[in-house]
Amino acid sequence: MRSMTGYGTAEGKVGKGRLFVEIKSVNHRFSEFNIKIPPRMGVLESHVRRRLQPIFQRGKVDVFFKEKEPLFGGVTVSVDTELARTYHKLIGKLRRDLGLKVDGDFLAVVGLDRILRVEEHEGSYEKLWGQVEGLLRRATQNVISMQAKEGAHLMRDQEKRLSVIRGYIKKIRSQSARVLDQHFERVRRKVSGGSEGGAIDEQRLQQEVAFLGGRQDIAEELTRLDSHVKQYGDLMRKKEPVGRKLDFLLQEMNREINTIGAKAADARISQMVVDCKSELERLKEQVQNVE
Image (cartoon, rainbow, N blue to C red; front, side, top):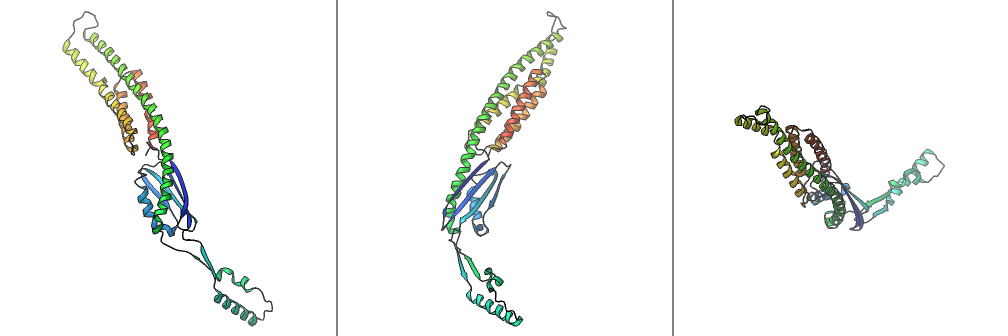
């Protein structure tokens, strides 16, 4: 069992520079990826998505790339000398034409940014995908490790809650049998006219018992609830995403426990149904963060 909450990073040499990779995942009803990489690396987005989709099948996953050092090497800075001479001549001519005697630094007027040329080295990011994928794999493993630790914690807690629910099922089944016996005895006395040795109308007794059994017998619901609890426990141990299946089972378990509460006309059973529903609600909250 894995949680959908996780965080992982990786940093290392790629090409001639260094790349930083960060992955964050949180719970989400479906699978959603938000990939933030530098525009010039956009060609790698589809590769990243294909690499991560089979791993994170549920949850919201944010991926962030940053070039700590340019992957194709540093920048080249050069001066456009011819353009600088042209500016110098034009500014000198302007001063003479206007009769300006102050001879200031023409660079202060022009600005260095007009004559400096800064060029970033370029290359194919596709060819660097193998190295990028290695960092992505490391970051992913860190996320999975965190998800697995939290998933193990969730699993231990859910196992305890399932054990409590099994206990409620056992108690409800036992109390239901006692309640049915008590009701049967009341029906028997009613049919016999209230006397211990009175004659019993067997046909009427059978009708009353059948009616009573149909309305208050919760054996089938308890059997189905017991089966759902067992399936839940089995699913938790599977090495695959089970969050949606667990969520579905919880819906079925809630349906059965609600029916039990409606059919069993007994205060003790009603209280145990409320307590059982409380445990199911806690399970549901936890399953929202299970992949």
